[in-house]
Image (tube, rainbow, N blue to C red; front, side, top):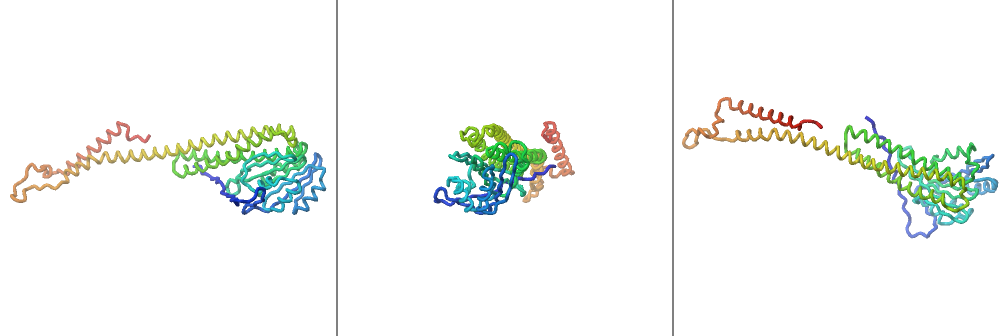
Length: 374
């Protein structure tokens, strides 16, 4: 029999401090220290360096000022770095606040010199828990800055493509790079949904063998996880639609064409979520039905047993009554006072009669089909 390898929704709470002024940088508890990777590239050249501090980052920006840049920041637990980004690139304080506040829903904000985009990256970690991580992008004409909560390497395929220089990733500028990163984030949605779908198929197989409460609870947990994915996928679809329709010159015409394909992916994700969510409801209903059916079968067996023993109990009760054979005062024989009590072999006749009644009932139940399992 197949076994379920449960994927759990990771519990994470971001507790904001009430009353702080808009634009303030509020780092959540447990935020990781940043790891900064700097990428500079043209069609023919590619450079990659790890950055240790703000001064090194500024030197690299001046050194490769004629290139396209990508600053990949993993971990947002450094308020000084966020303040440096804000002042260096003239970023609105509200954007920096949204980057630090990892509860944002997917969205696109259009500013004069740059675009700010937020995505939710969902994937299964090594502990079989679903990570719901915020990924933020700031897009300039020749620069892309990305922010991740964790050190996960889910975007490594894009980095490998950038290093290899094949395809359009170096040719079509920063907007295409942001498209590629957004697209791979959505590809992780497919992987997660298919894993949850495999769990549902396993649960369905187990239901045919033995329905129980644990399977119903596991199905309900998967339903909650599907709702969590849908909560991220719907605004992601709207955000990509905004990217396609926005009038900003920072997104090239070619990138918009590729974004239409990503939009189709979001529609496929939403359709899969809705289908699997309906399947979870059906499995819960089927589980309850099978449990109820099994209970009915148990009650049927108990009812049949009770039906057999009711007449036998009646006979035993009648003949179990204590009647005297003689009047205790006069000593007169009481002939009509349950004469069967004084019959020779009366016990055997009574037991034989009870057996015949029980067999007759079984034959009757069998002919009615009440003894059939189904």
